[in-house]
Length: 245
Ligand code: MG
Image 1 (cartoon, helix red, strand yellow):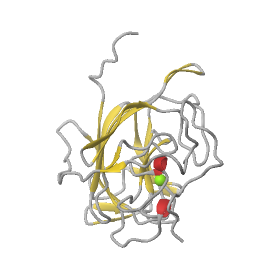
Image 2 (image 1 turned 180 degrees about the horizontal axis):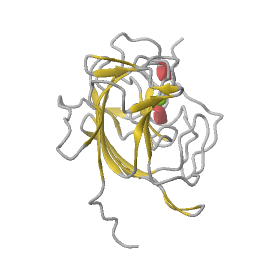
Image 3 (image 1 turned 90 degrees about the horizontal axis):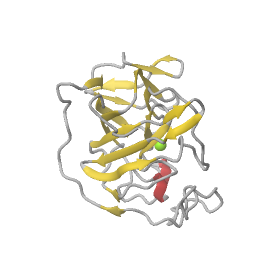
């Protein structure tokens, strides 16, 4: 049965927020229709997936098992998430994805995957085209923390893009001195602006930061749906100057 108001009312409060994690009462982002273009890599990009093979990726049990065809990879349900062999930190990241053209399931059960920065911080991948779900689980949400500013989803089967500017957390020993922060464009539409993260991603819960290296893999989620990815590249923020001490 379709839930008009998917979500929860028994989860922890999100720190600094008046909403619970995956709060069913949190207002859902308004819908915006994006423009038509995605982006090919610039000359200084590090290409993580060019459509040919998964040699740059590893899976749960070794080699990544996902299907590669026609220039894209596709989740092979049950084989687990995959992650890039390359570890990197602060960056500009581009990734394209497509939810299955054949619509199946609802709410979080429709075209679910995820882009995990440094392997732990999820930008949600979901088919939210005419598919109500809880706000902080919307497409391009910082899952469980912040809904996107708007819902810029294309229809299922269409290629969509995320352009992400990622600044990882910094620690001094065990002490967090700077939370991670992220800017995200979904299909060219701004959905997060330098948004500090509360902590690593969880489901139905809130997690605190734990000390970690300044680099990590890009991980993609197997949530059981036939989501496709292509044209994945990043640029390290080597010219990025935080200013001040
Ligand atoms: Mg997900």
